[in-house]
Length: 281
Image (tube, rainbow, N blue to C red; front, side, top):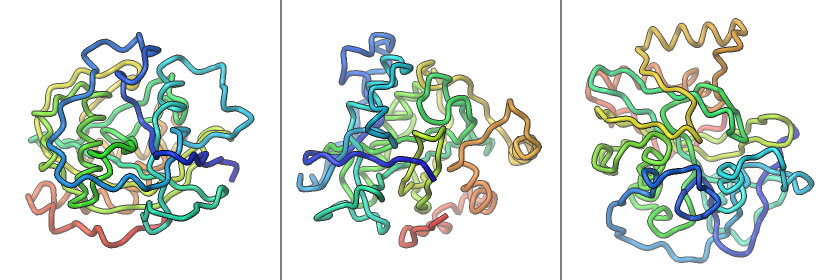
């Protein structure tokens, strides 16, 4: 597959979006300043490999003229955490043709046990206008998001991105309320030169929240029941152009989501957790 991975720079690793990092993001209001995160408990040693944010970019097209300022910043200024297939990010060398980065996918349910979905903005570089789970992004190379104990770094990153994409304040999604259920490794091309190659942490949370979506990131949102999601999947399988699903979301739907949804409704979600296995899908 023609998906290119990430460049390796001898500095720190990361990507995602953080409006305060660049003055080029004038289209983002102060409402999307980074939220206040939980206190850092155990700083990670700053010896890991890193990479500039390119979700998966080729050198020849790294100066893509079709991007708006926000997407250019997200792809080329932030840095992802590079990992190997066992989710180890402290490596002497990562082969350039098989680079991976760490990611997370949040599944937020309300008190009626409906799942919040988003349709990605049309300006997104990868997978524009596809429907996906509540929030998907990458931990950044910063101390608060490198903490591996209790998956705290990933949970801090999820809290940050829920605010950035959906305007959900930190108080509505405390980091301790996220339940990490598993990890999966997957590769998915987007348009031939962009794509994803990730170890993806799957985080579940049940909270009623106030939403104020960022139009630079999100085109539309909706809560769906289990039956409504099944109907969306049927439409996607039938080729409905208005219902395209992200590849990572579809992998979760096909392999895990429905049985995990049972645990959400029963209040037994922690029983479904398996953070030892990395599912290679």
